[in-house]
Image (tube, rainbow, N blue to C red):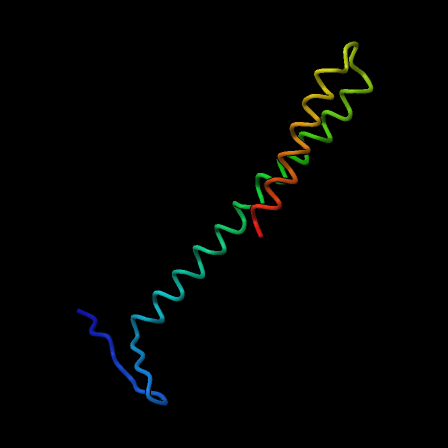
Length: 82
């Protein structure tokens, strides 16, 4: 088994397991940031798609409603990230 080593630096104790947990947390935060940006990107793409449909649709009210919903979701998802 791999035994963790302990060192003392300026009165604080660190061991090798602390560094492994920190590296693992950094990897998970990188995944979380990339997945957290997915919802704003998808809602922005949907809102731009709805804008394009508005100009070509015979009844644009459904596209307007879709645009309002997607654009609102875009801003809500951006505000939840902070």
